[in-house]
Length: 219
Image (cartoon, rainbow, N blue to C red):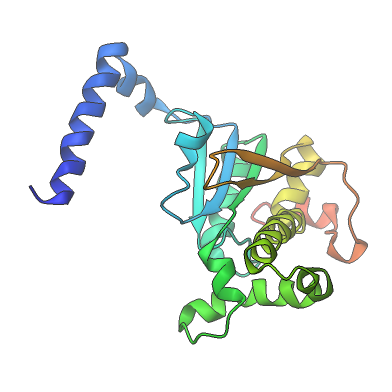
C-alpha cells in the first residue's frame, strides 16, 4: 500500500474513534473555534504541537516555520498573529523551540543553502550577539542547545515589539507570552520565560497607543 493511503485510512479510524466517544464531535467543532493559545513552533515533524501538549482540535491555533522565528517582515506570521490576537482573542502565545534544532544548527554553519540562508540570518545575528557566551562551551551540541534557548527568548521579545501585541496589552491586558523548549530525547517541555502585559521594554520599541487606537487596521 502506498504510504499516503495509510494517512487516509488513519483519518477514517480517527474519525470513527471521535464519533464513538461523542457523536456530535465534528458538528460542535465546525461551529466555531475559541482557542486560548497561539502556538508558534518549529516545522520539525518530531514536534507535533497538539500531541506533546495533550490538546484537542480547537484548543491551539498553530503557526510553524523553520526554527520558530518571529520576523517583523514576515507577513505570514503577522497575519496569523493578528488573527489570533484581534479576532480569536487568545490569552497566551507560546513560542516553542526544540533542542537539536536543524535550523539552528544550519545557522551556526557556513553552507550555501539558498533561501534558507536568508531566513536563518536572524539566528546568525543572535549568535554574533552572544558569541562570547556560546563559544565558551566547547561541546558543539551543548552550544547549539544554548542557542536554541536564546533564540526562543529572542522570538518572545520580538512578539512584544509588535504593535499587535502592544495594542492588546494596552486595551485588554492580554496575551501573556511564553518561551518553551521541547526535548526530542525526553518529550519534556521546559518553561524558559513568560512576558506579561505589564512588562517593561526599551522605549524605542513602544508604539503610541493613541495613534494605534485611531488606526483600526494597524499592522
